[in-house]
Length: 390
Image (cartoon, rainbow, N blue to C red; front, side, top):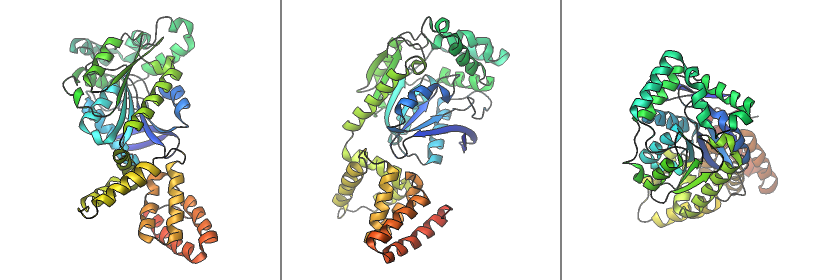
C-alpha cells in the first residue's frame, strides 16, 4: 500500500502497469474505492502506466470534516500528481470522479492529455435530494442508504444473479466514513460545469451504462454535447458502474479513445508533454524562457523530433529509453546532457542499478575511461537524490 501527504491530507494510491508508458489516472465514484477498477486495469496494464486513487474521505485516504468541494478534491489530485512527478495525464473519471476530471481539464488544461467521462455529467442531481442524503448519512451512517444506492450501481437483475458480488460491493460502500461520504455529496451538490464545459480542450469520450438510473444516458450525452468534439458511447447491460459489470467493454473503449487521441495530437504538443514528464517542469520552463529567435527553430526540431517522435514511440518504455540514452551520452562524452538525463531517471523509473548496468556496457564497448568518467558523474547525481549505489 502506498501513501503520500498531498494537499494537507494522507492519500492512498496505487501505481500499476507499464512504467514509462502513457499515464492514465482513474477517479472513483461516490462511496467507492480504487478496487472498482481492478478488472479494467488488468486489461490495460500492459499498455499504460496507471494511477489508482482513493479520494478524500474514501477508501484508505484521510477523511476530513465535511463539506468538501470539487475544487478541493481536484487540488488533492493535482497535489498527488505533483508528489509523484506526473506532469500530464489522461483521466478516467466516474460519477463524482468525472466532475473532478472536468474541473482539472478546465482549470489546469496543460495537465490533461485526454478525458474519459463515465456515467457523469456537468451537473448531477439537485440540492434538495443531496441535502436529504447528507442528513441521512450524517445521522445514521452510510449503511442507512446502502441497499438503495448499491442497487443503482448495477443493471436490473445483477443482485439476484450475483448475490455474493453485490454484497461485497455494498459492504465497500457501507464502509465509507460518514464524513467522507457526506462531504463528497456536498461537493456534487454544489458543482455545476454546464457553463464551463465548452472550455475543455482535451479529447473527450463520454460513456454511460444503458441501465444507469443515477446519471441516465441522456444526461451523460447532454454533457458530451457541451464539449467541442466530444464523443459518446453506450455500454449495454450496465448500470452506474460499468467497470464492475462490463470491464472488458470499458477497457476497450478507453484504449480506443486514448490511441485515437494520441494520433490527433501534434508532434510538438506530444513532444512537449513527454519532455515535461521526463525532464520535469522546472527544467523545461527554464529552457523555454531561454529560447531566442536564433535557436527557436532548433528547439522546435528537438521537441518534435526527439521528444514527439522517438521518445513517444511505443516499443520501449520510458525507463528503457532512459537507459539507452544514458549509455549513448556516456559513450560520446556528452557530460551536460548525461547529467540531465541521469537526473531525469527520477521521472523515468530507471534505477541506480539500471545506470550501473548501462555503464558496464559503456566500459566494454566505448572504453573504460568513458565509463569511469560517467560513473563519477552518476555517483554525484545519485547522491543528490539519495539513491543507493551498489
